[in-house]
Image (tube, rainbow, N blue to C red):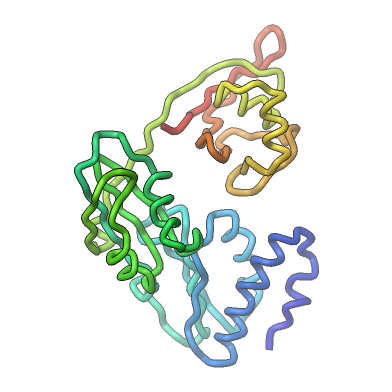
Amino acid sequence: MIDKELLTKNIKNNEERQWIMKTLSKVESVCKGHIIKYTDFYDPYQIAVCVPTLNQIVEVKYLIAGGYEQAERKVIIIYPEYMQVKKEDFPICAIRVTGKFEKNDLTHRDFLGAILNLGLKREKVGDILVRDGQADMIVSEELCDFIRMNLEKISKYRINIEQITFDALINVQEDFRLVCSTVASLRLDAIIGVGFGESRNAISKLISNDRVKVNFRPINQPSYTIAEGDLISFKGKGRIILDKIGNKTKKDKYQICIKRMI
């Protein structure tokens, strides 16, 4: 029997503790029933939080997969240490959505919104890959048929849906616009101000209202320091990456370049 309290005693963040406790409940079921269990789709931050705890439990093993190598959102499958499990055993599936869309008319948000409007939870949906008038979605296997039967439109467009293999997933290279500027500091509010062209005061309020994540971790401190390569998600606005921090100027400002995803 695993000791959940012992395993989580050093976890101070309540949200992180909830994720770990939920995952440990899966571990308990595996140990008691000698069965395979799996989580919902986790983002990279959730996975990074849970994996160190899983590594402490010798009675189980785990695999992590999201349908393709570069997947962002992934499922953790947990199983007894004596079993053999392959990534092909993961309870996820891929579906392709096509329609007579106008080029670049629909975005990731449109496809995700249509799925959630069916009453499904975000954690049941993995990555959504959008390119050239179609989208490939990775979802929980239990919902694959439900989505195929009930999802009829994306925005104003009627659609066709088919199940595909993971090998057939489209290869998406995310487009971005490069924005270069100078900032007095590498504070979160300063970087977002450059990346999204918003005033620093307005941004500070939005950050304090839990609208921003850094590397998928919720951050509500405008003064939080951003490092090169950090991914910033701004709810309702999109994503940016602090791509490069250059030398300081004569006025002691940082030269930076930001990739804004489009």
